[in-house]
Length: 206
View (cartoon, rainbow, N blue to C red):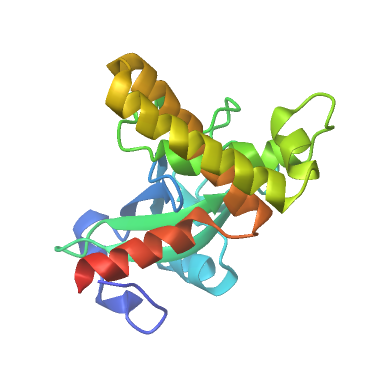
C-alpha cells in the first residue's frame, strides 16, 4: 500500500505499541541504508516535510535524520507491507546515512541488491565537477558532445570485436568501458539513468 497522510491511520499501529519498523532504501541504487522506527507523529512529519523523521526510543522524541549532520534523507515514496505493520521508504540520501560516515548502516559489501550502475552514475556526476587535469571524465565532458558520442561509438565497436574474436575477459572489459562511457554521454545530455530505465520498463510492460 502506498502510504499517504490520508490513509496512515489504517496502518497496524497497535501491534507494536504504536511503533512501526521502517527500512530506508536508496531510491536510485536499491541499497538498504538503515532501519528505524516511526510513530504516527514521525510518519506525519515525514510525509509533510519530505524528510525522513523517526521516533527515538532512547531519547523518547522525534528526530529528523541529519538534523545535526545535515545528511538528510529526501523521501520519494512510502510503502506499507501486506500486513501494514512495516514500512519501506525509498529515499535520496544527502551524504552518508550511517553515523560512522558510511553510505549504509549495513556492511556495504554485503548489499547484493545494490544497483552499481546507479552508484556509477553518481560517481560520474561527482567526477564531472572535478578539474580536467585530475579527472578523465571531466576532461572528456569538456571536449563536448561530439567527442563523448564518438567515444561511445568506439567502445561499441570494440565490444563487437571482442565478442567475435577475443577472450571472455576482454569482452567483459569492453562491455564495462561501453557502460561507463554511455553514462558519461547521459551526463552530457543531462539525462538520468532512471529515464532510460523507465523506457525499458514501459517496453517490458507492453
